[in-house]
Amino acid sequence: MKIIAIGRNYAEHIAELDNERPDEPVIFTKPDTAILKNNQPFYYPDFTKDIHFEVEILLKISKEGKYVEKQHANNYFDEIGIGIDFTARDLQSKAKEKGLPWAIAKGFNGSAPISGFVPKEQFPDLSNLNFGLKQNGEWKQQGNTSLMLYDFDYIISYVSQFFTLKKGDILFTGTPKGVGPIKIGDTLEAFIENEKKLEVEIK
Ligand code: MG
Image 1 (cartoon, rainbow, N blue to C red):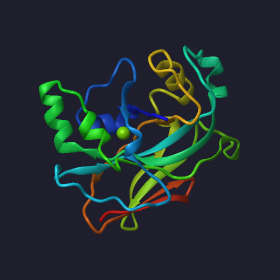
Image 2 (cartoon, rainbow, N blue to C red):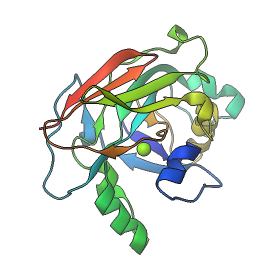
Image 3 (cartoon, rainbow, N blue to C red):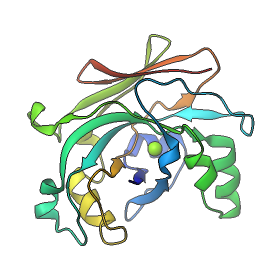
């Protein structure tokens, strides 16, 4: 399986990082070794001093798709979840300055803690879904999918031009405002509609 992630999909997050608003979705990938499941802890690596949390809604791809048309995109995912796109912001900033890829800054071991997945039918309106993240019990990110620049169907259609989607692939759909640094000893909790779906301890 593969992980495909969308950057800069929420206007207020673009503003907080002083980034340019993209004309098309910004895409990056993470290897499968980035995944942490079942609330496994995250061990802070020594090659970075500034890892940020980015909470994101996840889509689980349900069948193979290539050049998926937007009006059919809905048939290509059946479950949603929540995850954290850990980002080594110091390495990413250095890469951005030099115009180099973000592969290490976004794809290092454990950089993708994910929740279990639930059928999308459990949610009446995927384009109006509340989600968020608490750090040590305090709300840091509270977003709603209505604020996405590119919605789920557009993302699937767009991404599938370049990367054939396969059953089991996971899409990270972008983070709302409020990202921030983690430190050893933190507990992160991620929620969909105020229901806790994921917890990660930082060790
Ligand atoms: Mg992200």
